[in-house]
Amino acid sequence: MKRIAALAVFVLAIVFGLTQAPTLAAPAAGRAATFDVKDYGAKADGSTNDTGAIEKAINAANAAGGGIVEFPSGQYKSKNTVHLKSDVTLQLDSGATILGSSADTYDKPEANPNDDYQDYGHSHFHNAMFYGDKLTNIGFTGSGTIDGAGNLITGNPDSGEADKIISLTRCKGLTLSGITLRRGGHFAALINGCDDVTSDHLTIDTASDRDGWNIISTTNVTVTDADIAANDDALVFKSDYALGAKLPNGHVKVRDSKLSAKCCNALMFGSETCGDFTDYDFRDIAITGADKSGLGMVSMDGSNISDVHYRDITMTGVHSPIMLKIGTRKRCGNNPGVGHISNVTYDNITGTGNSPSFSPTLWGESGANHITDITFNKVDLTVPGGNDTMSTGVPSNDAKEYNPKSIGTRPAFGWYLHNADRVTFTDSSVRFADDDGRPAVIANTGSGLKFDHFTAQRGGDSPADVMFQSVSGYCLSDSADTSGRALRVSASGSTEGCG
Image 1 (cartoon, rainbow, N blue to C red):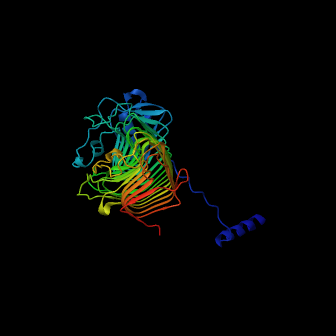
Image 2 (cartoon, one colour):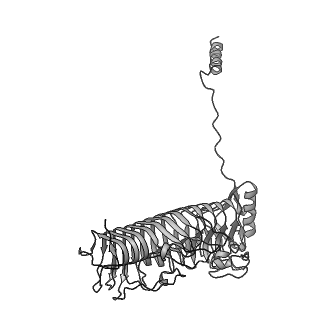
């Protein structure tokens, strides 16, 4: 009877909500299906052409609604272009290497009516080891390697030759993490017109070839712990006309990365600059060499570049530590005008230059195309120096070229500012390794230039420490040379404005 009574009470409790019936736990989210390329015929012996097996695995994953194409340890020769598909991630396990081929059997370059607006390599996408267009949710992950093996072309390829490892256009949802890209030809990775890109612990070694990673006309990018050693540009943001339109760029974060560029630029905007750039944040980056710019930014084709922020960056062995330039190349469709650079900040930056040296430079264009609203806080640069006293006139400039050497030898060993407004230096310094006869700073044509707690080394034969030429509203406060002496100021056609 007691058991019957207890059961009756329990039933009544459930009916009237006095206790809770037991619930079943929700099933755990299922893992993505895995498709082993060896199950689809890949030999992984380093000589058999495994492209067909790779594509079978990709097609199977795509047909199943998405999945992971796995490459176990081994050497996978790929003699043809692999055509990527949506919702498929290629996972290269430890010890897995996909090798490029010299068989000249890659896809040929496609026709592009917009060839004239950018270099050949930027205009053609099909001629790559891996290619995809208008794909969503794709990735390259793991800890293995894709190696062009010295077979990819660094110049303009003939039919059947590839000049890129990864070539993607108009993609959305790209992950590029963990793997190593080596010997990529013209580009280890080239993406254009993409959105939502994530990269973590990516390694690129193209020091014997050309570019590392070109991120073109792309939005919403996060890059962390990248290690890119390039011959040409290492990590570069561009916007060209290869897809027949000016496309947006921005909302980009780069963190905790290491960059080097043997011949060219380490961290760069341009030179292809059609669409506008906004909202970039670079932090905790070590640059260990650049024969052009360490931190370079040019607007050559009409773009507006703004809201860019650099913080906690070290540079060694750079020919031009910092360069900002507006040019008039206008190599973009729809008759572009002259661009702008504004609202750029540099915080806690150290840089050591090497020869041949190009002084850190801000070079705007005339009229409404000055460089504006640039802030340097705790920016300490050491340049090689070693020049004699020279004319302090405006150096020559090729407005259609972006290379730091397109501007002649700057008449200042440190900062040279031309057509720049509202530029502020705070708690910053510039020094030379060898005595230099030029001033530390020359500003020519501008307004609102402020130097607060600025330190400049004095050259033995320099005519002044800071020179202002046709500058309205300059101000030096609490600034000195490296020996604590007041800075020697020369001002011609200029007015002071410390109010």
